[in-house]
Length: 430
Image (tube, rainbow, N blue to C red; front, side, top):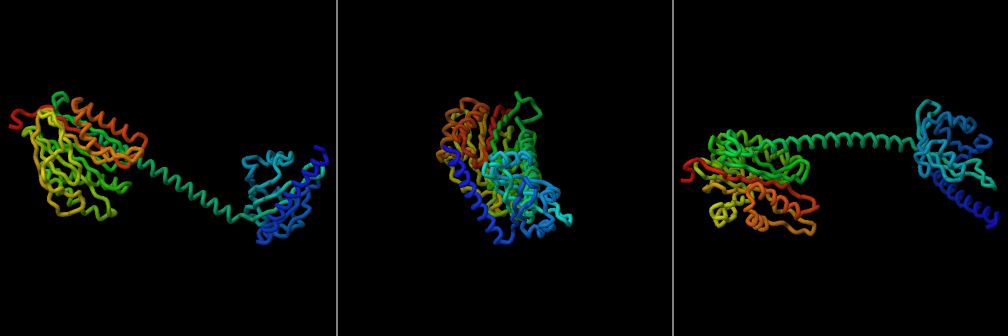
């Protein structure tokens, strides 16, 4: 390619760039928000400076020189291809022809001492040999925009800090929840060694979010009775978790009647119904509560809309739902009917029986294909694996459920616990 042809191509590019800049300048000038300038770096002068410069800086065209402009400059934020570069680095790239357009947000101190922001957009001027000697540019007053950006950045930072503080609070609340789970009984009576206990408890927990809404509690009712409650707060988020915390506190208030499951549940429902007025519609609590009596060899229980536990009967070597084959009216969840009277039912227990309680999150998990694990699958799996023993059985169930949902997102908490009858007091069940 001849030098003449190269020069023609260069001049054509320069002309295209010039037309683009003129179009940009013209549009800005029509809006009355810009000042056009032409700077010559050889003569160190502005060959042209628009009269609007006085409105921006307080200095007239005759006073504005490159030295004056440079002395007013407080900071420069290079944009586009020059972003992140210092002024000398950016100027070096322009001079070498690596970048033809200069875009920067420049903070200046005006004549009256106030700070303003100006966007500087320019294109390089080169002579016939391609040597850089000046720039043709336009200045926009962008002070209002910059102040808005700074205010937004400040607000964003405040929100980030608040979100971090909230996240820390949620993590702390989750640790407290976990600590409460870790403090639960592992055996009963607690006063005897584990190897000599009458009842052994095992539990598993997989929360779907930072704060869990499912919970359980195991507590002493008398020297020969232990209470076990498992609850599922319907709804999600902080309010549902607060309701769960409130229910825990309410349970302590009604412990004097904990030996009678129906009365215990009725009193919980009465207290919870009043609190529910403070929460949005759609939040309620399902609960199953039982009292295991190791002297009488029985379990007294009541159910408030919760999934029935599974019972592994050691003598018959079968697994059934707690009320399988019985006709009964399903009682409502807590918080729905204020004056509802919950009834108490009873079953006899023998050594090596296992009562297996859970929330519906255990069998309602979905895999990536949208299939549901299902209550029937849970019961069949329990039948197949019950020979493993209570501890290994619970681990196996959790493992199979995890395998089923895989990498799918949990929509609900998974909570389960087992009560293994290891021995009863002499004469129990007779």
